[in-house]
Length: 72
Image (tube, rainbow, N blue to C red; front, side):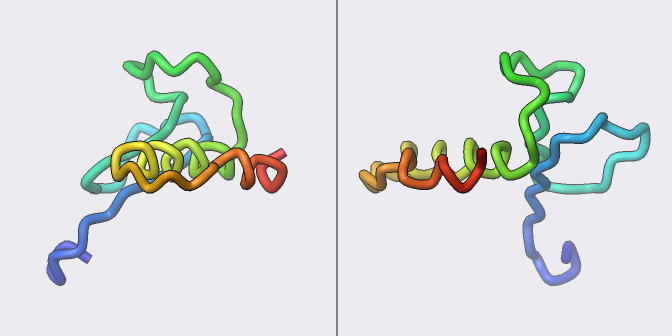
């Protein structure tokens, strides 16, 4: 991906391994320096939070609560 100038963003919910893949960003509440309160959420919920924050940043006014039932 790097050779093709494609940024990789990893979302995960597992314990962070010693060898982390090279990426633009890693979104994982179990990272040692992460202050996110909900450490034990599922991977789909990590992705939901990521999308919800993109929605907020872009001010798209998509009601992300419509997608919550798919994460529970």
